[in-house]
Amino acid sequence: MKLARAIHFDESDTRVFHSPARTGEWCISGGFEFSNWSEADLTGKARQAFSNGWMGCETFGRVSFVAVTQLEASEKEWIVDLLAKHFVDIYGAPSTEAARAVALEEVSQMQDLCDGHAPNTLLTVARELTEAGVNESYRIIEPQDADLGQFAIHGSLDDEPHHH
Image (cartoon, rainbow, N blue to C red; front, side, top):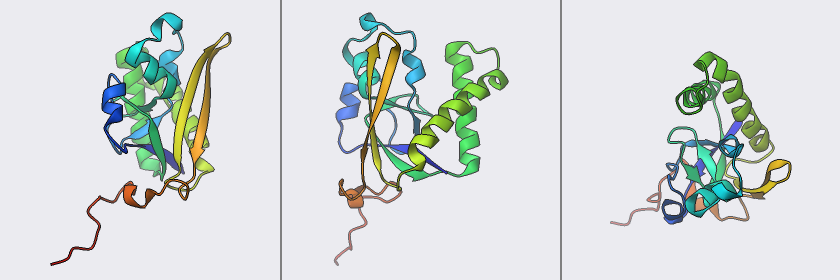
């Protein structure tokens, strides 16, 4: 079972998104946030979130790159709970129980997207507004294409051997 975590290569997300996701938090597409948007909504940082943002499941902020990572069943439950609560708090869902089905669907869609890829594969999303609604497409950057050695999700940047 796989899902994706927010990854940052530089500070750009803190500038382009109104609310940036935290490095390492689990992410979903979060396209539902834009389901009722029109061209008029697509300005400035909102446009950036719409065009290229994945949604973090803890901060509900946005991130440009996510990296495929192994997911435990217990973590999935926790993510679904967080999302269900978000749907109640922000979208007025009648109850977390009612919202769980939608939350599960969102997480499952993201799992489907990630499951075919090796850990540390990078994904980007591109959305556009069409007559039929929001169209999402994805770009896959294989781990060997992006020298991710130095960006191991769980590692730190000071794994270099120390010389005394």
